[in-house]
Image 1 (cartoon, rainbow, N blue to C red):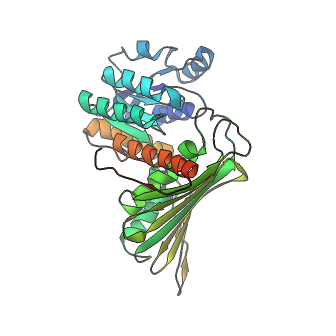
Image 2: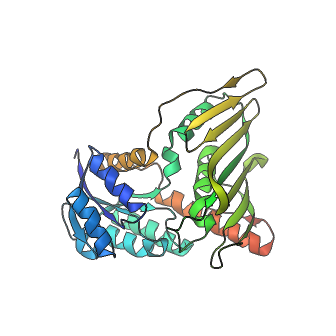
Image 3: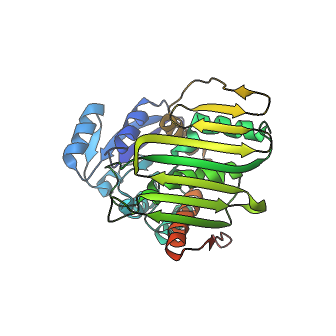
Length: 319
């Protein structure tokens, strides 16, 4: 297999970008799109000259579809993922993997039972800035990693209506911290609240503690006028700063400041290409269903920590 047939379920704010990228990749043939808003689905389908559906169950009956992207509201991820996996389709589910931990566990178990690839849309893993930062870290260029600080803030994105800032914004950084530190945190302590949004939290400060006392700090909110996506890694010999948006990194030590220049690349294109190649080569993807489950467990623990006013001990041994 050198090319796979793909479809996108949910073609709203973010799903339409999946459609665009799949139409551009050499590894994929875009076959169809689906959305409960049939007019929106038709508009996208006409633009890319593919078939259109308003019910994913009908789309999933097609034999020429090998894999799907699920870009619907979080509250529908569990239903749509189970449908897709039951139909034998490899699935990429946008983050968060599900609304609840129990739903996420069922999705992961179902993918395993059906022997289908399950990937979670943690797009920042495919940000070239993150990838270069990991290369610098692995080469020991900033010494031993001591702590990391991330800031993901902006005004409220109106596309979001079924989860709060922890599961929508902070979960990206939770996954990146697991990836950067190469393991799971042992405890989480957080303060979350809502200033402008009654239903869900719109700000969060989260501290994760790893083995050997290493720490990660995450700030996320929907209150800041400017869009900021930044990460700072503090090492024993130098500090690395990354701007997610420009993908630029700066390495500062006592002796010098370095600002290496690299070509900017679209993270979503790298992510979906990786997904397609994983299906074609039958290999485990970079961001697995288990990664999605663990990130959700940490996110829910952060919310619980804030309610209790205490640190929450984390454990992943039974997963």
